[in-house]
Image 1: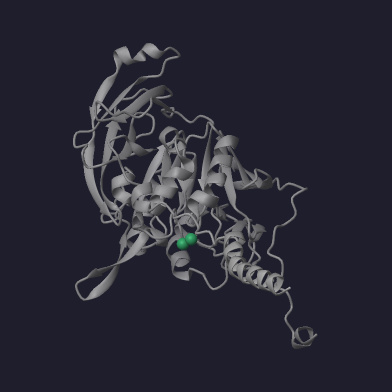
Image 2: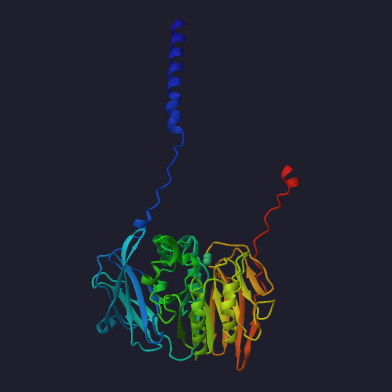
Amino acid sequence: MKRSLRYQHWMLILLILAVPVFAHEEAPRAKRPPAPVPPAELYRPTAVPDRIILTWQGDPARTQSVTWRTDTSVTEAIAQITTADPGPKFTDRIQTVNAVTTPLTTDLGTAHYHTARFENLTPSTKYVYRVGDGTNWSEWIHFRTASDKPEPFSFIYFGDAQNDIKSLWSRVAREAFSDSPRARFIIHAGDLINRANNDAEWGEWFYGAGWVNAMIPSIPTPGNHEYASVREGERNVRQLSKHWRPQFALPENGVSGLEETCYYLDYQGVRIISLNSNEMRDEQTPWLESVLKNNPNRWTILTFHHPIFSSAKNRDNPELRAAWKPILDKYRVDLVLQGHDHTYARSNYNLGVNTNDPKSGTVYVVSVSGPKMYNLNRQSWMKRVAEDTQLYQIIHINGDTLEYEARTATGALYDSFVIKKRPGRPNQLVERMPNNAPERLRPPAPATSRRSSRR
Ligand SMILES: [Fe+2]
Ligand SMILES: [Fe+2]
């Protein structure tokens, strides 16, 4: 009996000792989350071209510029071009163009940006090009020159991309491309990214539309988020992102001091004007007037970031409106494409005080393509609005008709209208809003009255 008790005693001690061991082994080990890949590694340039983007510095019918990025080992970059051919043997007749290289030191390191300018191209022609250093090349990529005459075409317009660009903007960019793969250019109405000099955000932006940027030229205008506060002597000044000019080769036909942010170009009977609504607004006013006065194109489309008519609360821009709207009215600008307010609002012609001029027939749009959303401030001039909705727009111009479509991130038609030119008279606006697309508004915040909180 005594012996059996002793045995039991030892068994108990062993059990007590063993429990923590088993418990330790059986308890789920707290897993460490995987470490994020550091941006400096993720967006490190190599000798192989990346961030390839088409833009125009000159006439879209006869020129095309391409810009790309490499590491600093590439000091003599080149581009090659010829007319596109169904067969692969076009490489027998290529022309080589030397690029201009600009070093850019960012928060992630130093890279080289290279711009090659193709000139003396034939209008309405499909070309094939590649960029590189003679050893490390991009793929061969197609683009098409504009016609030198008014001809039908489509283009894409995006409001602010700005936040979570890789995660949540890319789907909008790709949906837009899927909808209009033959679009001739893409207008970005500012706030492409959130922090002007953040290289990783630019990396996300280039990732978002990927190789589409190398096929379809971009027309970007800067938003306030393309400006960074920089110390200059005793004070802080706001300066254009140091990425902007090295990575976008744009016309320098605007106001001096606003090179590549204030400019215009003509595409198949349409004058596209980018104004820089961030600075030197008064200096741009007489320039805008001269560019509108001497305009042989049938259509005029303006893009700038801060809206003439704001769609969000406490964000009105009365000074901007006072400076530019009389000129827009006088010269009957057809369409104004804006961003900044992170909502959707599209105007009618003739509603409200201090809003649109029925004699001018200008349609104003504020849109947003990224995920950051504000509250709408509904006003009488608004014909179609949305909150909490990522959108892209496709605009088609054919002779005297402009067809506009705003589609949601899922590709559903949300807003549509047609503008018709009428010689000697203001434009006619024809509504084509879809019947089966209810207004998308943010649900009201849940009531938090004392009575309900006591329950
Ligand atoms: Fe903005
Ligand atoms: Fe914005």
